[in-house]
Length: 635
Image (tube, rainbow, N blue to C red; front, side):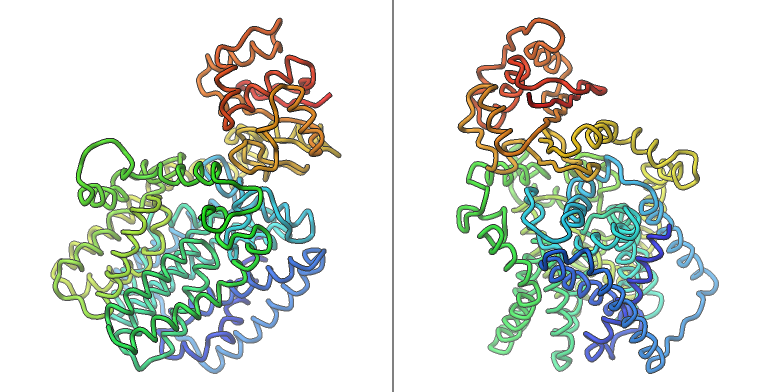
């Protein structure tokens, strides 16, 4: 809890820094939108500062002092801004009070995730959103990490470095919670400024109760923050088109889009979408100039992350576009694996002979009613975008009442949906559209003849999302928060790797472990590497023909231990048993029927190499865990 409080204090200070950075351009915004804009810009500034601190050897050992100065200066600037621009707020009365209750419930759901340990459902947090910052903290600085995700733009991820330092998981995930609150304020303020008070409430409700947004707001995922950056960039571009004389919107849109590209590669797609919309709505030299200027400013804001990638990997968008840019410890085979994995989401690559337009429509609607195809494992209901946001888009699209602002948002949405459908149909990748479409929902409630329908669906969506998150996540998380389970008991019950990780931390002290079919390295305090061939070319599997080759090569690279997640590696229990029999761990080695075919396939040959090394005595068992998981040591 203390770590979360420190994070909140830092985030409030970031609002003051944002006042200094962009206050000159936000004077005409609704106070809530102005407050939110300052907050997201200030937090992004802290993320960028963290990059420069981390590039200095040992920077994270002393850099927390600079974070303290940043926070204190922000509080002073915020106080000065309040004196100059006093904020007037009142408690909603009557039925409007229900909105306030709803926002408190949404915040409670988010805090439940923040205050409880991440588990298997929170996969990406444990794999890299928290794991990479932990590695940097251990090293005291930023350095090339074997996890290719470490080369993604990290203006949000790097905030977790400080959160982990002063508050562990809760301190790190607290930044996502703060972004969530700022997103609610942004939706409220943008809609209220455009459509009036009641529209602000409906927009904020629509944003807060999108299932994937509610879920991720209690994790270390960066889609909520990235979505706010991108969504505000789209909204400010729409306001610019509506009133071309207000050039402040150009700067705000460009800066937010730059931070979107500085937090996730998909931000580059949003820059393209907004640029195309700016061109489409002006279609003259001035429009071209505006689009180029927005793209240039956004690119300059995002540039440090892409320059870092060039220095570390030789590829500004590593690990993508290997065929164009190349990349260190990567090749075309691994690039193809990664690309193919991205294409497994959605229905475009699925079976069936439906025409492409029908598949595209089904994919969009599936975000609301069939999210299992658009989320990587876990519990699909919490990964949905929901019906209210999509209905807002559809009703405005056919209403015939859209002004320039609504048309620009709809245009950016259509372009983004097309790119999403072609590239990777993950529901998380649609979060950048949630904020502007929530604003349109608020306006639709006020201005469209279907307004009552929109309001009703938004209310039902809020109730449904609250029920889903309470059922699928909060009930379990409250066991820790209320003290009925210790954090250790909770993680042991919900993470199959938790118990092996504790053993590895004891057994591998002074060594280095190769993890096979296991990515939750965040739980480790000893050096480790994702060793599956698809992750990098650092381990020369092509040169390994026998178990002895494998042992010699791994020891040469400094590995002392191997951890094997046999169920994930082999699947069915029968396959696990057959593989075990070939190792001789349960008696005399028995030939594994799949040995030769596996050894001939570079992507999976490690299964045969490990089995041969065990059978040959080059790898000896240290400890066996539930489900056939193994910790082994090189002889």
